[in-house]
Length: 201
Image (tube, helix red, strand yellow):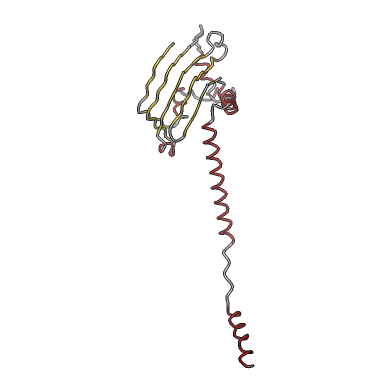
């Protein structure tokens, strides 16, 4: 009887001596799920970007690209095929740039290109630089229209790249060379080799 009574007591003593497992701080779980959510968002954005760049010649995306250039830069651009790979380069076929009004009645397109292939190095893109290893342009046709006032279809086209400004801003702003404006807005570009074939004016 003594052994039967003492056995449960010892089992109870061992059970009472067990310490509760420490709980992990809640902020660790919050941090984990926050980082996991950001990672998933980054994966979705990168995947979407790669899909869009690989299908730029689809009717829906081509319409969006043309509309964006028309609304923001006042230029009409069309192309038959366009593919961009972040890791290798881009290819454009049958690219055309419409002549802006009022010069369009003299020439339908200011610029036409049969094929443009640009190969670049991927790693410089990570720091904002573009290193073109090789470029090839075939079938370049340029139709420049001028008027008696010294204007041209090219100068009219470039006007669309300038930011809109009010009358007071135009009067107070100091003149800035166009070359400096264009260069400041472009990333650093290094071209190792580029060839042009079939130029017509």
